[in-house]
Amino acid sequence: MKTLVILSSILGDRSNSKQLADHLIHRVKASNPAAVIKVRDIGAQPIPYFDGNTAGALFTPADARTVEQQRLVEMSDELVAELMQADRIVFAVPVYNFNMPAQFKSYLDHLARAGITFRYTAEGVPEGLVKGKQVFVLTARGGKAEGTPSDTLTPYLRQMLAFLGMDDVTFIAAEGMAMGEVAALEGMAQAKQRIDALLPAAQQDSLAA
Image 1 (cartoon, helix red, strand yellow):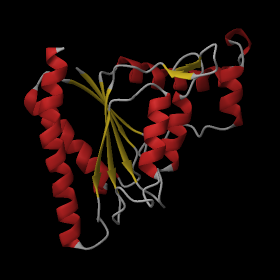
Image 2 (image 1 turned 90 degrees about the vertical axis):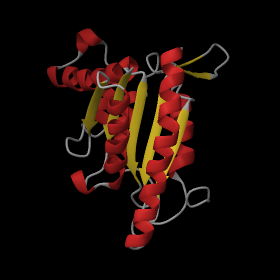
Image 3 (image 1 turned 180 degrees about the horizontal axis):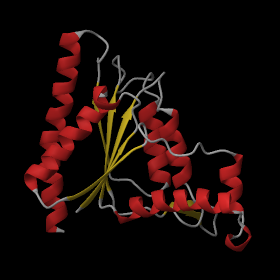
C-alpha cells in the first residue's frame, strides 16, 4: 500500500497532530518495513493560497495559460496526482479557532477539481472521483468537543471528503491538549490506542483484498 500523509500544523515538531501522524507512520513501518510512505508538510511549506489567480489559471485553456498560470496548475495537478496514487491517506489536522488551519482549507480547494476529483451527473448529482481510499483524519484540539455541536471540523471534513469520493474515513481525535498535563497525556494516549487498535485490522483487510 502507498500511504500519503498530509501534515498541516504550523507548530512543527511541537504539533500534537503531527505526533499522532508520526505514531501512525511508526505503526505502518513496523508492520511493513517496505511500506511506501510520502509525507507532505503544508504547515512548514504552505501551498499557494487559493485565490482568484489560481481559480483563473484552472479555468483557462491549457494552450492559453501564462507561465505563472501554468505553474499554479502544475501545483494543483501534483497535489491531485499524489492523492490519486495513494491507497491510504492520512490527514493530520489541528483545530484552530474551532476549525481547520487556513493552509489545509486551501489544500482542499486545490483538490476540488470539476471533472478530475468530482463531477456532476446528468441528473445534477455530485459524484466523487477519488474512490477506493482508506482515510484517517487525525485531529488535536485544546479542549474537548468530540461528538458535540462545538466540533465543527468533523462534520465539514466528513462532507467534503465524501464529496470527493472518500467515504471510508476514520476520525481519531486527541482532545484536552490545553487542559493541563494530565488531560493532555490522557487525550494523546487514548488517540494512540485507537490508532493501534484500528491500523492492524485495516492493513490486514487491505492486504487480503
